[in-house]
Structures are given as C-alpha cells and as structure tokens.
Image (tube, rainbow, N blue to C red):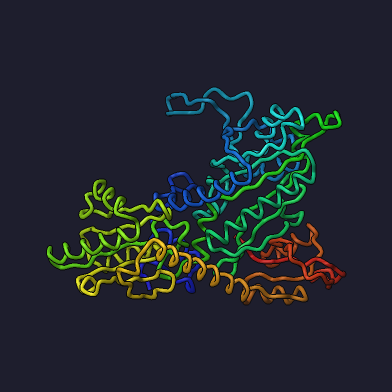
Length: 511
C-alpha cells in the first residue's frame, strides 16, 4: 500500500485528494475554491477534448467562442434561469483599480454589473437572435470550449470548484422534433464517450423537474457510480424548448412565411470527468488511468549497474521501440531529448499513443513507483537478464500482473491489443461494481436502510414531486439521479406516497 495515500476504506475523501497529489494532477490555488491543473492533469483534459471534439464535429457541430462577461440584465430575461444561478454568480462591478492612501481600491463603477459566465445560454441567445433570420439559417450547431465560474461553498478538486473548464454546445432548430432529436443525440455521444474512452459505465435518463437545468423543458443526464457508492452526474443535455428563444427574441421566417421562435438546446461536460475517472478506477496505490486518455500508455524502466550494462539495455530498448513506434520516431526522439539523460518521449503517429523511457538518475524501484502512482497502464522493465532472454517484463497497472514478452511479440498491433484488453477489463470491472451496488426498494424505509448500510443506486417506483423530493433530500441526503430510459413496463407503488406509479427512478447520495 502506498505510504503517501490514505486507504479508501479509512477515508475516501482524503484518498481521493492523496491520489491527485501523488499523481501531480492539480493543486488548490491562492484564490479560494479554484484549482491549478498541472501538466499531468491537463494532458488528461486534452485527451478528453480531442476525443469529444472529434465526435462533435462528426455530428455536424463547429467551434466558436463567446465572451466571459455577460450583462446582468441578460440573466433576468429568463425567470427560471436567473433563479437557478443567482446565488452562484460572480460579479464584476468596476472597470479599474485606483491608488488611494490605503492602497488599491476599485474605481469607476460600471453602469451595469457584468456576470462572469456561469453558463452561456443568455449571451449566446443574444447572438443567435442576430444570426437567425430564416429557416435557411437553421439548424445552428455551435460548441465552445471555455471556463465558467460558479461560487461553491464546499469545493473538491475536479469535482466541484469555483472555476472549471468545460465545453458547452448550443443549438437552434426549426422544429421541436429536431431539437429533441439533437438533445438525445448529444446525450448518446456523451454516454458512448464515457464508456468507450473513459471506461465508465453510465445510466442514461431524464432529470425530474426538481433537478432539471434552470430554464429547460427537459434535462437528460448520464449518471455514474463511484467506488464509495455515491453517484456522479457526468454530463447533461437540455431541451430548452422555446424558453430562451422567447427571452432573447430568436425568431425566423418559416417555410410558411410566418414568423416563429426557434427551438434551442444546450449540453455540456466538464473537468469533472477527470474526477469521475479517478474515483471509478484508481486504487490504494494511486491513479489508474484508462489507456485512451492516459498521457503515457507505457513507461520503460531500464535496469543496469554499470556503463556496459547500460549500453546493452539501451540497445535492446531501441529494438523494442522500433517495433512499437518505428525507427523514424526513435531517431527523432534521440535528436530531441539526447535520449539517455532525461525521460525520453516517443509518439506513435499510427496509434496516437505515447511511450516514455525513464533514463533519470534514480533507483529502478523509485522509477517504478513514480509511474505506478501516475496511472500509466503498462511498465516495461528491461535489465541485462531480460536482454539475454531477448525479452522484457510487462507489468500491468490495473491488476499489477506481470508477464514476460519476447522481442518478436512486440509490435504496434500487439500494443494496441494490450491497451484494448485493459480498457475492456476496466469497463467490465466498473460495470460489475455498478450492478452489485444497484438495489431495489419497495418502501421508503427500505430505501433509507439501503442508503445507510450500502449507499449505491436504489431503484424504486416513485411519482416525481418537488416537495417530496426536497423532504427526502433533507431526510437522507439522497436525490433522484435520473428517471432511467430503461423502464420495467410494469406498475408499482410509489415508495413515499403508496400511490400507483409506472415510473421507476434511481435514488442515490451524490457529489
């Protein structure tokens, strides 16, 4: 067990922070509630961005950028929206600082305060009202990658910080049917990404009115279950109906030559996905990363005692790398890094994977520990005895298993197969956990007992009601995470009222 990481069974919250610190993913910043994403953490976010951005563009979306600052009056135009975000807004009230006898103080008050965006429906709606004139201008399919600001009382790195990174898609459509189709399409994109890239199984469903996005007609979500039995919302997609179109006058001349309001959607995921990945897969030794977002898929650790052994090991590693990334990349890395003084990085343009060779002046055990805590899927260990056997030792981070791999086995295809196997094993493990931690309740007392003793998802019949949901949240800190798309097709008694209901929901305590 890693000495610098608290075991999950003793203190899950501290374990989570210890894993982040050990892997050097992020730190709290001097600004309360904000975080600094370190290079190792940002590399994971870049991998998430690349994959999602490709998926967005494959569905016809394009990227743009909208202002960080939003006029305060914009938020008041949509009643539910301002009510939902008013308590979280950060406000700019002055345009400059002035020197005084007591030091710097705000000067020149703004005529209208500006809100640092908590989300961008309002400012984007204002622009769409200028861009949309005719049905021929629709659909408008735009995404932006940016930061947002929401004051939070209790923060936790990646999961809930005052400022965070995300993407937000905003679309406008000619008909209600097209908007609904878009909303569900993007939810499917998120669900596929979570499972295919992050190896996180998710449940798709709709939010209740008590939990939906302020100003939305319907909010859909993907929900995942963390190792401590708490749920985490990993992405949302909102059908906004015509609410924001009416608030910001997004009108167009229809095919029937009548002026009508557009139908809009918005959808987003954030750096919270990094937190979800950590809590779904990591262990008491540190970070465990899915191969498809890992900054490095393999770390090669040379083992030698003399200069002669070093040269022997290096020559063999060159052969391994030639098989895995090609001779051209090997030569290019040698020119870039000097190759045998510092960690050396190799990029395989065919597979898009990176490999590091750790030539630092440190003990082999320290190097192995270093890469283990950073969640690198594989370590290849190469010493003189391995060279004599024309092989290397492969250690798998997921289950800490090891195997001897001969040089003639190593290839791009072999590495890709190994990575795919690890991804599948991670997804299967997470699915098994989710299934084991999903229980059914026939009564409210049974649900409370399950939450107290096991946590996890509780599936039950329920008639959504804002007042009742508030009472349940106060009583056992659980909320309706979603109304799953998959329903039993039967009826049952609502766990709270006892009335007949044809709707099953998932309750859970959540982040």
